[in-house]
Length: 166
Image (tube, rainbow, N blue to C red; front, side):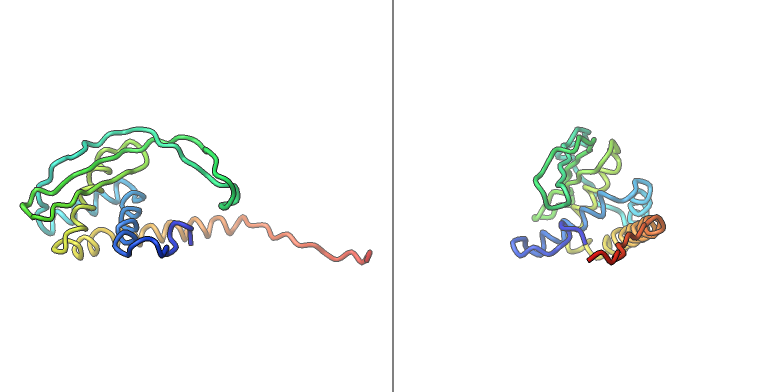
């Protein structure tokens, strides 16, 4: 389990849940997210939305840590696209949907932001979970298992034999 996925006592459960679905939406392949978005739209008409921040590409600095625990260092820059939307369905509790995705896919960022806004609505939450997040999370787990299996095939086990000099 990655450090970012471990439970932190200083983060409320709602924030942790939102961070988890934002991670799934951001890391999903663009075509898979598009397919899931279209399935959701076919199941029920999606509410209209307004762009608070139109999708725009920019750069972000990626930082790393030696061994995962050492001092931070700047690893390099990556291209990210961000977007923010608000649903225009007349609800009093209008929540903004946001997304930051790696790369230049404005469609991916916009769809992820709309889905984030829908997930914050109780009337839409379970439907989006079932039709979008669950399939994307399953596909991500499958890709991760395949990558781990491929890496395991190249693993070299080193061992030291006692030479008897002592």
